[in-house]
Length: 251
Image (cartoon, rainbow, N blue to C red; front, side, top):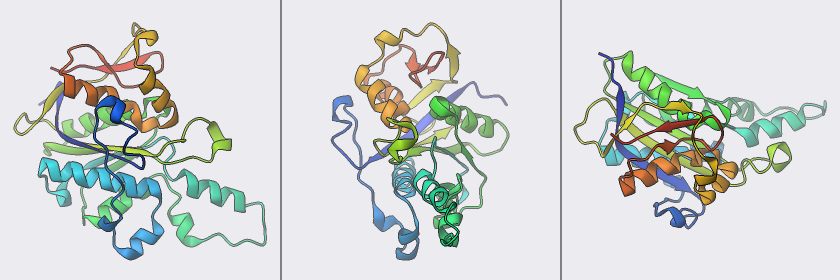
């Protein structure tokens, strides 16, 4: 059966600056380091801690069983700080690369830690798609729901602070969001249409505070959707600030 929409069962945000989202009337949570065992906590990056905090809160709100929950982890930079540190060591023949850092440098590091933490053997995917990362995360989650008997899927979008010599202003602000998506209406808080490309979005009408934030925190592309859930807006909802623009709508 083809599902032409997605139901949202819950969402949660994690940001080191909890006041950052006050202008959007959205509640953000601080990183909860207690969710990780001490040994894992020492090894994991800020991005992983934020993503796991947001994912845990979203799953608790949706009352879903994490051991059997498929997931999509979407991040523009992934473990960018660890990767950058390793790359800067490569020219120095006298420096040995840390096996732990090498293990933690791959793009699916956070997805792996989430699976280990929750003893989850369900399928998981890690993706990146520049400015379209959040929109592609929604489409990937929908695609996976079409191909399995599962009715629920976790989507986590996150990025931490980037070394600013790489691509300023990207990565000035660490941010993570998580949504539990479903093909079933029961227990959902909203129903959205599948993302589609639009050439007709007037960029001048986009919320400038959101555009500025998304330029510094790529995962913040989720904000217009969450604001629409709050206001029940029936206008097209942008999922990225570029042109062409991915849009969705409340149904």
